[in-house]
Image (cartoon, rainbow, N blue to C red; front, side, top):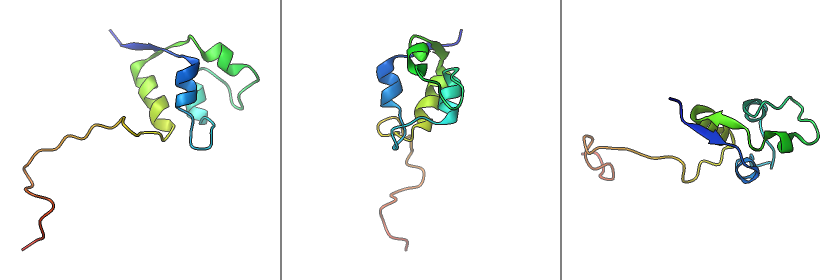
Length: 84
C-alpha cells in the first residue's frame, strides 16, 4: 500500500521556491492548472497525494536544507588527508 500525505496550507507555503512562487510541476502535483487560477490554494489544501509526489513537490522548491540524508562508509579512507 502506497503511503499518502494530506496537503496543508502551511506545507504549500513552506515549499515555495526562493522567488516565493511554485513551479509548474509543483502545481500539477496539486492538480492546479498553469497559470494558477485565483483561489487555487483553497482547492489544493486537503488534497491527498502519494509519498513520491510529496517528495517531488518538496525537492522542486529548492529548499532542501535538512531534507537530505548523507550516507557514507569509510571505504575511501580519510578524505581530509593530502595525497602522498
